[in-house]
View 1: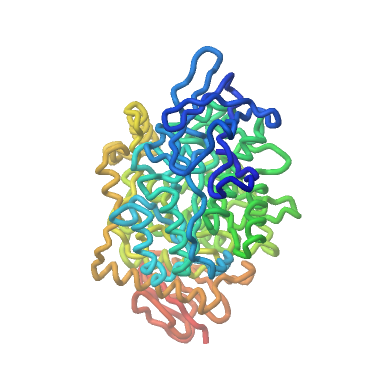
View 2: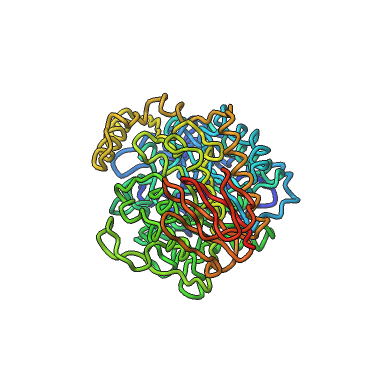
Length: 591
């Protein structure tokens, strides 16, 4: 459906005024509503739009509808609306007219600014036993007890079948029916706000999934080229104004009607956006407008590997003005030291010097040569004007776990002491921390890549593509589970029965999260952070609190002492030095 149009006084307020669709490629368009056909007319005021006369047929909640397009030779099969709000019969079925109203109870919710937040990334389908929004609601008390302040949902737009990471979505205004549909998502947001938690959504505006993508039959939603996951979205070419409006109207819907607190924009480095005003600036403008109207902050986070300050720089200095960006550099620097892995893009990391440098500057690459890329990469952040909490740091993510051959988590390969050390390095940092579901109790379940495309050939191509990619990176193809096998999906479901060791890891995360507020670790200026390192050890902190860490498999004496505030182990802390065993850490108050 289109963006909300002005509604006449005698029309219902919770549904669009009329059926309409942007289909500039079509010679004629038919609307099929509950099995009856209706001829659409060209809109004389909007190029490429087709509308139904209101006195012919008008939308009503619950109606099933689709469009058939005539290309000059033949009529297409009935197709879902590109702006579909619900796909109750799946991505190939008819769309459903959905009422926009909802009995919200979150009037007292005033939102949260990004500073001070602890984000928890989760996949709805594998987070709870039911794999639904209702299952997430059941765990909100647990998440609040852990200390997180926001949940970030991996994409929930409709995809083929019921098993998918979500990055194969095709209907950008709709919600996966097996998760609970649009009403289920609103119930989750409402419940989260009443539990004191913000809700972010991960949205994919760089490509459409391969299964059920009919948008190209309607108009030029895509352009030449490939992101590696699908065709490039047409943000800059002919007719791109409507494509950009398509995205911005979806942003308006999630942040406005659905009360969502923020969006995480997937892989913005793959946008083909060459206009003077970036689509990211436009998204930020929509968020700012809704925040001004509601008094509730709206946060926009970008995922990028460009090390480009423009992403979070203010528009006044030529930036895009996003609230924050994911920071893979911190993950890579920590992971290589603790795990010892140095393959693929990890070749650019792996020393204490690099970790210390990254912690002190945010970006690992600031115009430096990258061995992996075989070229110079990145540009420095202006630390005088960019607060470190605008960078999102983590020990792992869905990508860093799921894009391994077996989808094995760090908790399946590292010791509890090593896991606690990684958590301390991220949670003690001035960056905004993000947890990936289950890491807080050292989940023993993997998170492999999984799909359930409705086309057998797509499943075959996905399977062979994964095998080929991992073989190229040196992994054994036999270690790669079949993405389309239901057992692969089932293996990723979290096991909520904890053993004693997992309880201890959970308590460590709780304690470290609590220290962030107690010691004001989300400082405003990264230049305040003191980072030092020596033979196997690293310290970072401030005059009043310090983290001492041993990033080696041998005991070390760290030239920092004082009063022990917290440790996962039992270090020897003296007035001037601390003895740490392999992979141990200590939070200290200097004397």
